Length: 358
Image (tube, rainbow, N blue to C red; front, top):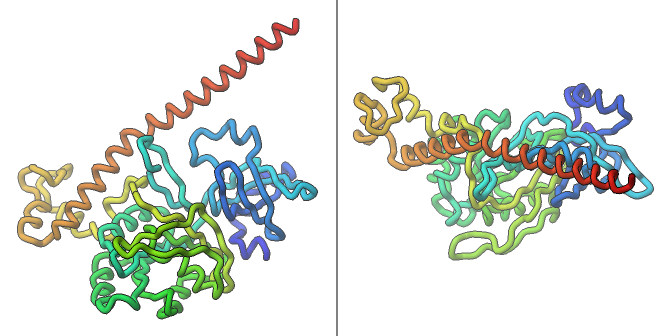
């Protein structure tokens, strides 16, 4: 394998020039396991870990390498490991708000060309969830594609496909069956060597099965799905990058139970265009579409011109974005203060040790 097959190009080379002057070499993160990484240099896979300096300067989890990142390393072939000293600026990344209370960015994967949003045409199908994914991908520079899997088990697949196309336009929507191989060529049309694709979706949607079908062999583990809710009993537990002939690099991600937006432009995503279209006719430019007089959005909803579920989803996303905007700066400041306190404590301990030696 070459670095070009891993996605390396002239733009990355230009960004890497300062690292090369320091005698470092590029490698791509193909898997992350807490504080340990699996890297590929274009010649071989090698274990990696971040340097102490890297660890100290990292403020938030998003500052650490993620699957798909290009990093600057010093190699130690005899020990079959590498030390990561720097992160090549990310071209694109797919993020969400980290699950839990803290308002922090969680990067799912980076340097991606295409995101395949997978839903199964069983109990897994949820058009509003597709809208949320479309909102989270907007303005990332990544091309989204909606994939409706398991068409072999749903006789209404053609009708669902048409409905989804109308909902997500202009996002491409394709219908496949990874189990039977139906329409898999339509999926491959969005992939090519040197490109990186990521498959996202809830547990049990069939992401790993799709990857295995593309590869023609089992590269990603698959598990049974519960019949009551179409969820996987076990899911992918780490983000892993695979190389598939003629399809480039493919990243499998754990099933996402909770998708909270990070990008604050999500409300202008496909599916919400109709809300924004009517909003242009509101009496007030800063109309919130709640109780303001002359609200064209509210009027359109009352006439049935905007589907209730679309409007509910729009308001929910807007509330999330307002919350994230209010908390993001606060969260980053707390992380910096934590680092500063740690540094101050280290300096104090060092001085105490020196004074005792005098």
